Length: 195
Image (cartoon, rainbow, N blue to C red; front, side, top):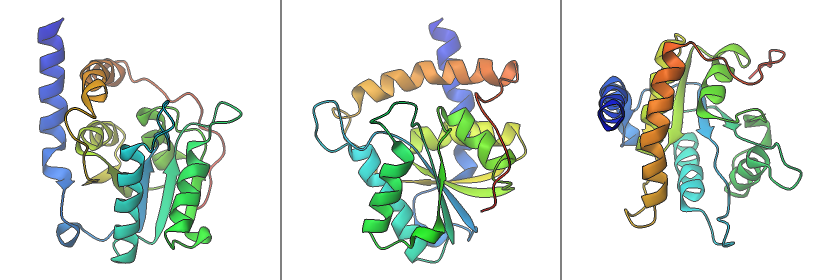
C-alpha cells in the first residue's frame, strides 16, 4: 500500500512539474482562471489560509492582466455552506467585477471541477489557481481530458498548519490514479454554460 501511494505521488508530481508557475511574469496569458474551492473558515471559526491565499492569487492574476474571467468552483451541497458564493464575494471585495466571475456550484471534488471546466464551461485552456500540491493533482486530471492547464501556485501554509491536509493529499493521489485508470466521471455535469 505504501509503495503504491509513493508511486502515485511521484507520478502526479512528475506529470505536473512542467506546468507549474510561482511567478506571475512567467505565466502565459490565458482568458480564464479556475479557482479550486475550499472552505472560507476552519471548524474553529478562524480564517482558512488556503482560501485566503487562493483569492489573493486570483486577484493578482486578474489585476496583472493574465486572466479576464474567473471560474470559482466548489461545493455548496449544504444549506449554510457555499464555497463558490464565498469565493465570489471575497473576489468582489478585492475589486474584481461581478460580471467577470463565473460560479460553478458542482465542484464537489477536483475531478469534478476540471471536467466541468472542460465540458460544461467549454474551456480548452485554463490557469488553475490553488496551492502547489493541489495544482499538481488538478493538472494530472486536466491532461487526461485534453484540457491545457497551467497551475499558478498560491502561497502555501506552514508545515504545521497544513499537516492534516498534506496527509490527506497522499491518499487523494492514490484515489486519483485509480480514478484516471477507471475513467471516473464527475458527479454532475449538466447543461453547458458560457464564460
